[in-house]
Length: 258
Image 1 (cartoon, rainbow, N blue to C red):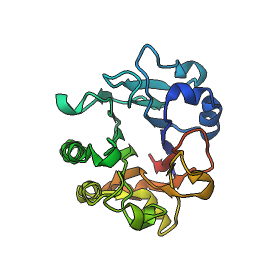
Image 2: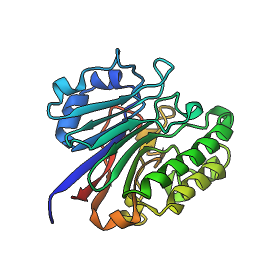
Image 3: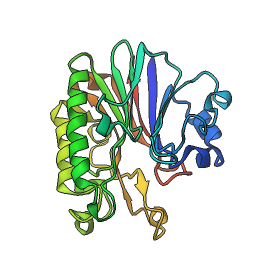
């Protein structure tokens, strides 16, 4: 096997809180070449100087207009050819949810997909957002292969959550609208790397903070690494690091041959 790169995605549920929970030690132990972070809840002026403690990385940041809300970041040891934030549509670019890095042989898109909210109040917006994102990803994929990773806020199949029957069409993250949105990502020719390489293995990447859900493993798999089908032969591993604590999500990732 040739040289590989490890790409990890982690919804940290607040980067400043995470820094107080051995974030730097965790990242040092995981040693990703690229770390995609969601839900930073930080503006540029309140973002910790991650590169001071994590040497060798460059930081790319996209903050929400609303302080203390949403937001994404990427730490990368690899120098991209270019990087951009958002997708170029004002109505969908206020919450700091997309960072794109272009490398020689692929685009990397780090996404924090909107949650449909309590009582599914944002489900209509979520459907629009997914449709807009599909168009954005299609355009990138026409130029070079994609690695699309992040908190996609949807359990795709019953195997991807502990209690599918109780949640179907009732709970954000497991409605048919959201499942259809995920199917549209797959319809672009993207592959769910974890499911492809791990078969029917049951692992989750998110647990509610309530009802001792993590202790009971009443979880959801809503964090993903999807890749263009033509890139899949280079994916050597896809994993969920469900022993890593500190957030209501755990890191997920892939190892890709360069």
